Amino acid sequence: DIQMTQSPSTLSASVGDRVTITCRASQSISIWLAWYQQKPGRAPKLLIYKASSLESGVPSRFSGSGSGTEFTLTISSLQPDDFATYYCQQYKSYSTFGQGSKVEIK
Amino acid sequence: QLQLQESGPGLVKPSETLSLTCTVSGGSITSSSYYWGWIRQPPGKGLEWIGSIYYSGGPYYNPSLKSRVTVSVDRSKNEFSLNLSSVTAADTAVYYCARQADTSMYERFDHWGQGTLVTVSS
Image (cartoon, rainbow over all chains, first blue to last red; front, side, top):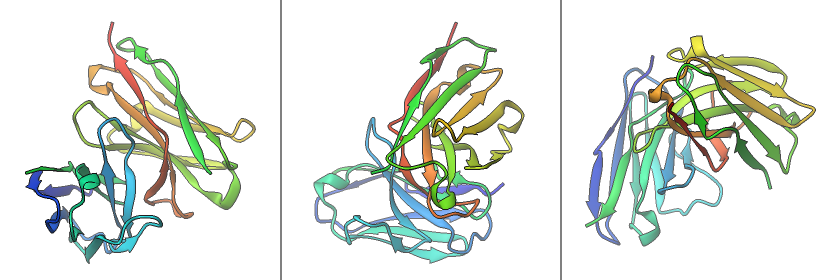
């Protein structure tokens, strides 16, 4: 099984901050990684796929990078709507999600 | 616009079978050869993929749940279903149905249902 580990689990930030979340895979997954945003009581929303491709309609302040076992999600300038929990997902073999990273207001 | 909607009992007794259906609207479940999946999220916890199925069949499952899970598709009703047997309190979760983007067996999920909470309790 491929395990996904995210860090940090919680991040306190202010509007306008640059935010980076890391996701590590237990073995190489090439670029088969997606990022999701989830708000309380809502379904996850796809942000990034193939590690760095922006899903249609997602603001350009979101970006993804990495390959192999280490990946990052970056929000270039945090907006009020971005306070949420973020999950990574590997889809190299079956599907596994990270444990989540909550971005909260500082 | 593609929409997915989960339906089924919100309360299931321990040792019984959890059964949910996902109805797809705004598009055909057989169009463009997509895969369709189930994901769950225990209260306050992270996401866990349960299983997926191609529009013509051929399901595949999370190895940790494989012995208890069945996913099936009904093309005539434009829906797919989840059965999870021998449930315990650990199966209490919000269950989501979703579409896998593109046509590969392993993919990201680009369209999600709103989710339905299933509680396992006597």
